[in-house]
Image 1 (cartoon, rainbow, N blue to C red):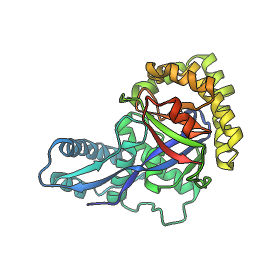
Image 2 (image 1 turned 60 degrees about the vertical axis):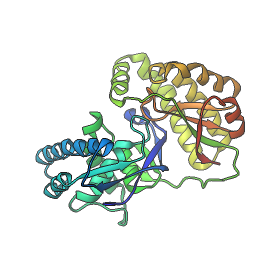
Image 3 (image 1 turned 30 degrees about the vertical axis):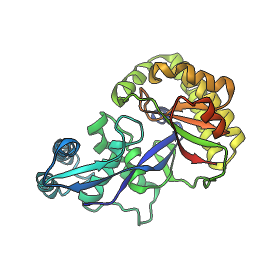
Image 4 (image 1 turned 180 degrees about the vertical axis):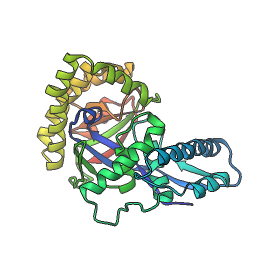
Length: 312
């Protein structure tokens, strides 16, 4: 082992909305993780990771030249260790909306950044914004654009509340209840999602006045309400707002929902057994579900494998 473990994340609320300044809530998900490792005999996935790190190191070199005051890396050591067989060993599935590139970015910053901001110090809002800015620039290598939230979540391993683009803070979320019937779960769509094309579709849609209005009046409004409800533990309101949000997504974000899930999505809204929403940018990967009764949801979705993330 070369470095510490970094975990995947789940953005419970705020996908797409945070681009338009909605609230968001992101939690670490310890089921998946990754760490930097060394090996003299690289093959398969490890070899591919090592080659990708080579390109990433070149990108970080350019990034540092362009913005010398933002962050400095020990690129000499990074490049030497890449030559010696450095790779990112990860169980985090790629293209699933659970932050595979975020964990890698966090690991590289942790190991190779000079004067890094650490979890142990007093994390002021300003420091969090600096970190988010650095991580956004680093992660742009993988997605073209990045908010920096995935790596931030992975690096701190804390729930993060996004109040707005320039206002983020660690959040206290209600503690889990193992016997709780209410649950947040993941369904594997069986398709790998590509972030960049989905964001392109969204950005195109933003040119439409009606779409922008819907975002403001419905999508952002229900997202903000869900975040508030979740943090306060107001379960009843949480489910009614999640239902509204699920409906808006089905009506206005169809391209982001894999086709074979359109009817499953509708069924949840009609039966109230569960409500589905996007996990990350959509287009495949995981779909996020909320249910007031996990047994009912499992029965209703018995053709799919459910992974429970959080119980309350």
